[in-house]
Length: 277
Image (cartoon, rainbow, N blue to C red):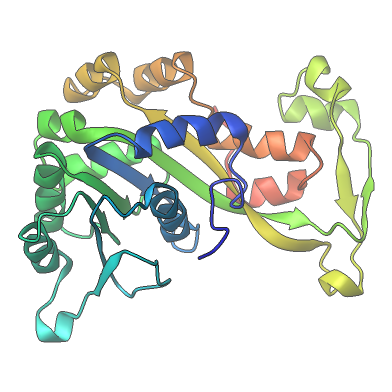
């Protein structure tokens, strides 16, 4: 767990600082979303290790416990013995924790208890399967959660994916024809300062051209206007515009930033993100 920080996961500086503000709130819900294997739990562990202190009681319920975190009470789910996320979460609340991590919200009962916990003075970290920050909202509302309660408790939603990082041993500078750059919607200014790279593969990376992975993220921070619009079930196009005006950088743009810095390739970001329409 040593060295597990938002920097180490590849979070861009502007997202890191905003995320740190949200995970230090006294109560509410921090929600991380993405497909299986996109690093959601690792991000939650990094967030917990950044706020872990002797003054506060942090309890997690997970399936399974993936890392041991010093000073944190970690409870594994055991469905065979009847210890589900919902039942575990109820018993955790009787121990009066300050911060709670729920490994995953899979059913309406767990969602309901997590939202109530966030509304009653706890800081709740959790994950849910969804494709982006706006799909999450629909997931919770389909679980029968009251829209006003849900948006009231929500501090932020973080959607993430993992992209492979170019091997530092065999990566080399490359240039791309103008039509390729236009296809990705890159401006002349962006391309003028870009540091495009690719890699041919070597023995260090087993001929793959990539070593390790890095997170690309979109962070939706809640404010009063967004809460009102979500509760009113405004169209996603309106919510997206509001989010962009409030500084949200969407997954595709976050991925392109890594290409511009020479950390990964267009091929790789096409594998994990869609072009925005």
